Image (cartoon, rainbow, N blue to C red; front, side, top):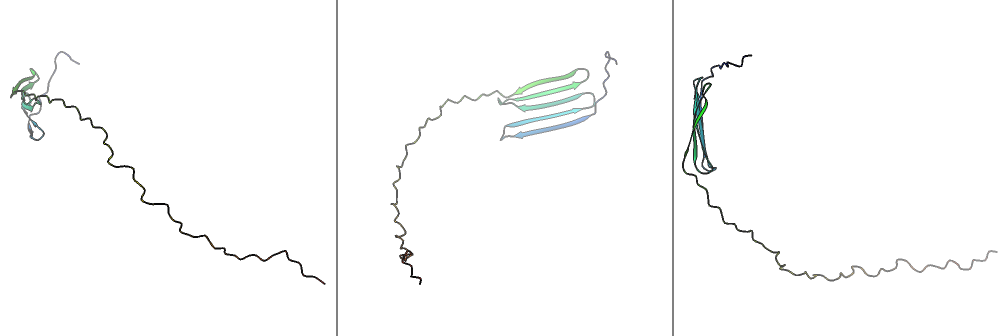
Amino acid sequence: MSYGHEKYEKGMPFDFNYEVKDHYKGLDYSHNSNSDGNLVTGKYHVLLPDGRTQIVTYTADHYKGYQAEVAYEGEAKYPEPGHYKPAPSYGHPAPAYGTPAPSYGHPAPAYGTPAPSYGHPAPVNGHPAPAY
């Protein structure tokens, strides 16, 4: 294993780019890059939260490494802080009704006193008939 001299293999050539713009969500960014297998060049930009656009132009190879130039377009804008308004303090509302009065009386019985379903019983302890 040799640590003194590193050998780099030539990379594969490529070329790509993409772009995203969504004004509703405030997104705006893109990236493009290409390579001949030895040197990679590219550029990307992104819309920052402060309203500026950051633009990075770069090159990269095995000898000089990654080298970037960063630039900004626009002016940073910071919104004025809103004035503090405490949440309203509401108490419980007074009831708008009283205790309801009953709308009924005691119910009348739905039945009368029952009539007896039997007559008077015949006496059981009479005098026995004479047995002669």
